[in-house]
Image 1: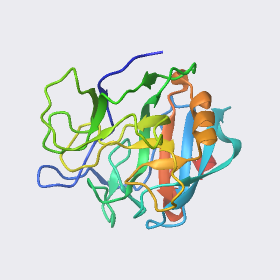
Image 2: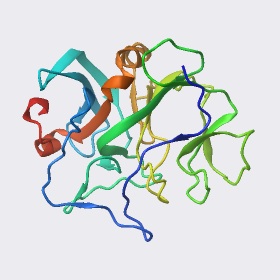
Image 3: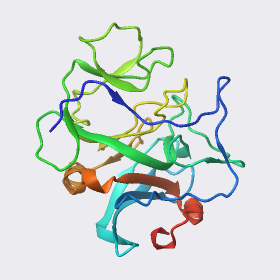
Length: 244
């Protein structure tokens, strides 16, 4: 078990006045050979807020389904290409930006699990309190990072409490979206417990509490799990046919 105070939350490329996305020319998403677990999230379209999560594990060089599909809800405005292990297609219509209400599409590593109490699992895990903040202020040096607010010099005006009063973060996983913390590229992307309002998230992927607990217990550090998140018609971009 690890106590983590500062965690980078994903990013590789972004469209802004400071930087342009890495443009994909082959339109293929390659899965790293050393990864043996994938959380595959599929939605009906770019603007859908509902979808399905299916766990996969690699055995005999082929990806095989694990367990039943899990119903999820994500960004209230659907998906937009995020910043991770993939490249952004040159014809991308939707690109994830800070505050756009879209969840990031693409392929991402997972940083750590988290919750309000210790959990005995085989994956990196952090226990958070109200002092732990995820900073979504693009002008802060702590942008897109989870920090202990009592241990740093506060230069941010906007953040999320990692211990929420509505308990949606009682269990969760940090997604490595926008690891370079490029301004306005999107921040604080998690898998977490869904609310009951059905309105979608600000950009995270949410599921029932029992399902996120099942995911946390399934993840294995040594298998280098990934999140693959795309609309159904974009799954053809995956290079490995056993995942389509």
